[in-house]
Length: 435
Image 1: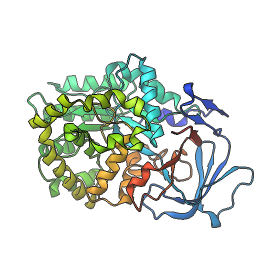
Image 2: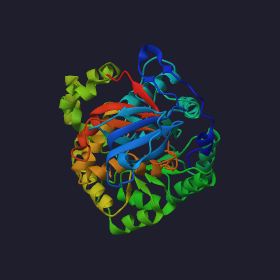
Image 3: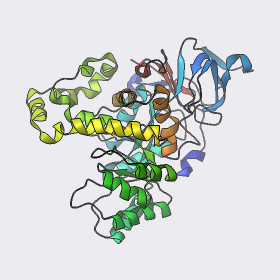
Image 4: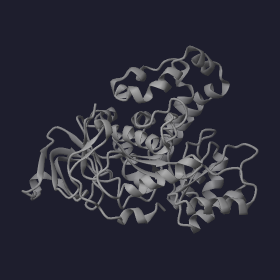
């Protein structure tokens, strides 16, 4: 499970946190009571929205949630009228990465810059399912630091490098021990269907060792056969869609019995072929709010020679029918009651935009047949459950961290309303200076 030590670290009281360059500013101290009132409240559990609702925040956590008319509100708190707006929990990406920044900055600065971009897009937590060897130590350190005051960036939890291609059970167990000793939050493993894949006995030993060390396991996969093997071995999270065959009743039953989470990562497959031309979203204002951050990669995907290469790449073009199958499998699994969690694989590989693609993923999940409420739950409460963070994050319930997003429109009417961000709050602190 995610390292429990993070949950109980002491909270410091800071009245103001201003980052270099004024990128984001936390304007309320964690021990100040704040009342957000008059808004529609969607709490991330799947319950009906509270119209004319109020969220009371104290010491960085949700103190109370309910219909304004039925609540006694603290008079000495800061009251903020959000009439006409919608409050949702902060988005949680249960399958992201922080490998996109290839600048010459320090590891810490590169990680922080990406987490600040994610926060600005309303993604208040990123679970990094696969990091570089050199990034793990610093990412763990950032995870420790996020317990000690208001944040100007997203929370982060991390797996080390994705574990793959071991020949023996002993090798697999030793690799898990190295990750556990490095204080990774979760283990990521990799099956591709290739000749070097671990055998079921080897990845079964790996999963067993992770569980012995108190860590969950998320698996990269593509094929239905591998999904069956991993589920039988006790995997906790299927970290990509099954894309070769329709999921079958036996797999669905096994997933539901074990409570396994499924992150579809539809945008990962979209990014394989969408840059055969220049997509319209590259000029969308919501994308362009971080035009400078994305500029190098935008130039690369807009290069005519690369676009021609994408058009002529059989593997990339094959992802078009694979994505259609991923859509159908997501609908089937969701209808069967499988725990669906937001996961994008963004923040790695060219054209997989951290922060922005999480909103694209929500839209694609609705296109697959999920309701906007189901998709919002997948991006909040269910994403937290998939990583065993739900005692702390993911829902607007008393005692949970006050990570939330205020929207100018209702995402239950149109999921694209998640892009209409009024403000982002992390640990009870509002982030200002949003573009």
